[in-house]
Length: 315
Image 1 (cartoon, rainbow, N blue to C red):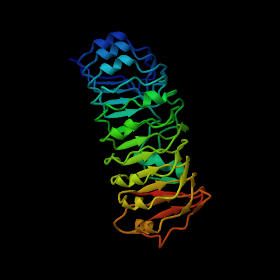
Image 2: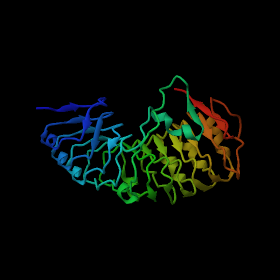
Image 3: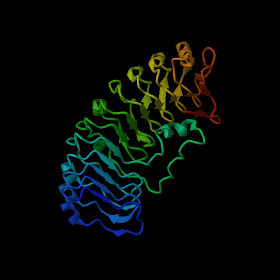
Image 4: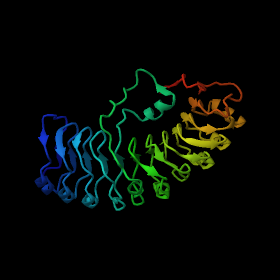
């Protein structure tokens, strides 16, 4: 029985997806990425109950919402429709307990790209960034985006450059296996920064380019595996938390373009020690913040105080 169907990288393959493919009940992997396929995703594909991976990256002819019937795909682990024409709202997928990776965003070539927009760059010999999207996924409703409570195995959640609005639902704090949460550049996400201190496996947290307000949560100091934290280009106020000195795995931190005030905590001089990994600290465009780093800057740490500057991450 057919378990893999790969129609990817066929721009000359045009037309809509045949509904009769829904009869492939043993299919585990279905890939139509970078093809000329257009139209809607058939609701009847919900019959593909063995499906574990569906990829439609760069299939720009898809102009539809994700069928609500796909909630029946209980074995689905990877859903990747980045750089496609998907729009509408996300269905209530709280029963998809096996889902591990959701990407409804502009694809990235490497996880380290999360902070480029905030003054952090990679070495020139790193992988090139993904081509700019001609059409990112559109019109994601905030309420629908909150339906994550049952995604207990979710590891990567990227909802980048959509039109999400409102506050981040409390249910995000239950995604205990999450390693990447990327909500960059939705613009209209508001309210305080989400409470995520229980997500102890989190390695990348990107909340940049939104309208978050309030203070930086001191409880983020519990994210001891965090490597990248970007809260730049929001409306965050208050001081820099001294508690963040607990983040020994942190490689890059950007708080650029907010309303943070005060001074860099004296205890942060520990970030220059040999037991720490921080290489990029981006502080620019906070008028009320004294950006002088306490003590000697050492161990490869780069402090970015001006918008024209950048630091380089190396492996």
